[in-house]
Structures are given as C-alpha cells and as structure tokens.
Length: 395
Image (cartoon, rainbow, N blue to C red; front, side):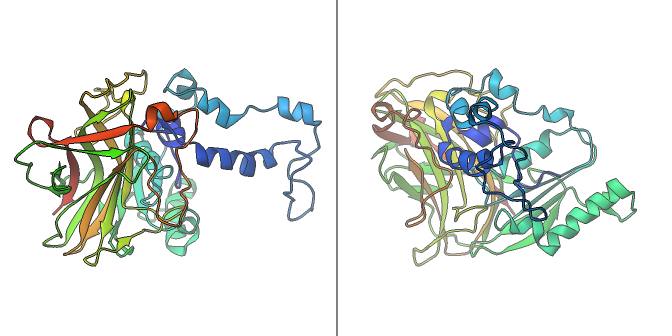
C-alpha cells in the first residue's frame, strides 16, 4: 500500500526530465537520514518511552562515516539512467500481490507519477489506484483515508468479506480551480472516455488555441528570466482535464543545450492565479521538465499521451538550429470554470510562486553550468514547426 511514494529512482526521485533535482536531496539527507544513522551519538532523536537515543550504541565518528555513502553526491555523479539507477528501481512487473497505490495531485516532483506508473506497471490481478488532494501527511491520517486503508487491509490480511473486491479500480479526487475536489470512481487510467485535445502554441499572440496558427512564428526569452506565458482564451464553458499531459515543442538554443521547465497554471477572470495546496508547498496545476540533450525517446515505452525519455545518452543541440522535442508533463485533474484561463509558462529555470521558495528545485551548479544553460531560448509555432500541448479533455 504505497501512499505517496515513487517508483522510478531516476525520473521521479533525482532527475526530472534529465535535470538534477538537487535541493530536496541536499536538505533531506542531513535533516532526516544522517541524524538517524545507526551509531550516531550526536543525534537529537530520543525514544519516547525510554528517553534513550534512537540510533543505538554510539560508533566512533570515523567508523560512522565509513558505514555510509553520500547519497546526494552519488546521484550527482550519475547524470544518466545507468546501471546504478537500474539497481535502485524496482521491476514493477514482478509485483503480484494485491496493491492499493495512493498518489497526490499536489505531489508533482515526487509523490504522484510513481504511484500512477507503479500501479500501471504492476502485474497484480487485484490492484487499485487512488489519487487525492491535500498535504503529504494529512491524507494518510484523515478518517476518510484511514477507512480506505482499513477496508483494503482487512480484506487481504484478515480475510474479511467487506466487498472490497467490488470497488472500482480507480478512485480520483476531481480537483476544481478553487482547490476543492469531489470524489469520482473510474475503471481505468487513462480514462477510456478521454478525448485528447491539442492546444496549439502561437508565439505571435502568446496564445493557446484548439486551432493551429495560420502562420509560423517564434518567440525568444532569456533562459534564466521569467520565460514566456501562453494563454487560452477564457473558457466558454466549464472544462475538465483529467489524465496525463504532454507537449511537443520546436525549440532552439543559443548554446548546446536547453533546460525546459513547463508549468500549467490557472487564472480567474480578474487575472488572479490559483496556487493549489500541494504535498509540501503551494503548487500550480502541474509541471513538466526536459533537458533537450536528453530528448531521445524509448519508443517501446512511449505512449501518444506519455513520451518516455530514454536518458541513456546525451545529444547536444546545434546552436541556432531548431529541434523537435517531446515533454512528459505530470498527470493532473482540474476543472476550469467558465471565464477562467489556462496558461502555459515556459522557462529555463524553476517556476516559483512569489514569496514562496520552491522545495523541489534544480539549481546544482555542476549540473547547470552557466555557459550552457543561461543562453537565449526560442520557441517555434505554426506551419511546419507547430508546437502544442496534448490535453486529456473529459466530456
């Protein structure tokens, strides 16, 4: 019963789209791992019942250091999805036991994709997917979710005939633009009734439209600046998108590489943006990432609605030349009210809400060398370089 976990050590834990996600690791390692290492005499953690250290008998500092590896440095030393990562990611097809996988729409960057992919790739004949909203901790402990856990475990661990096996296989919190959600039961993922709708980018108008632009255009931005915003017109009627999202973009860089940070955002008729409650911080609708030199796809694992990046080699860009890339944007659920707008923000750095520092940042100086990742980026649209979002419209 993985509750807000991850299943791909490279794509979810450490490298989003091939970009090293360093800030969480460098904070998590000294805060949560080192103080709990067995033999650490300096730990501040104490057993509630005995008052003793939770780390057991003290070990000499030199031996303590020799008993561990430096996790964040190890990850930084492996920029590709190599054998080191494969040893640390499970073969999900070997999972055959009953499975309840619970993810969080607000867990983009860590606690969402893995729950969905883990559920999808598991071989379990009895498997259920549940996706909720809220913070990382509250969803596990609220009565509604405790009851879900109890019914699943009672059935499979105690043999109680409580009707669990008749539960629909997918339980989704359908999230609305005001941050609330309603529960809806489904039978598969992606939803069988999904209508895949293209929203074409228009660099000339900075728009997103269901109609491809009549003429080709381009727009450039400073990689480390605010990027470019592309917006739909106000929705004429309430519109739901629930499922995976992807983008096909024509891009150009003034350097030999380009990091693409794609963010989907919601704005009300007055122009105010909604920041949703996330697992650990306020979040936009969803995000996607890609290091353009990692653009090679694994055709065997790619789907029309979810490209699978191989991350097995580096193919530098030719400065000043256009290249076609596909981005995996993490799944989402959002109901956009009439009059609201969907905005796609493209940047060469992390998107952050004003006054709210991000937790899952990608700013490792060794991974993002300024001479490579601080150039000028260009997006091409229309004509033979039509760029678009593929959105999961639910009627």
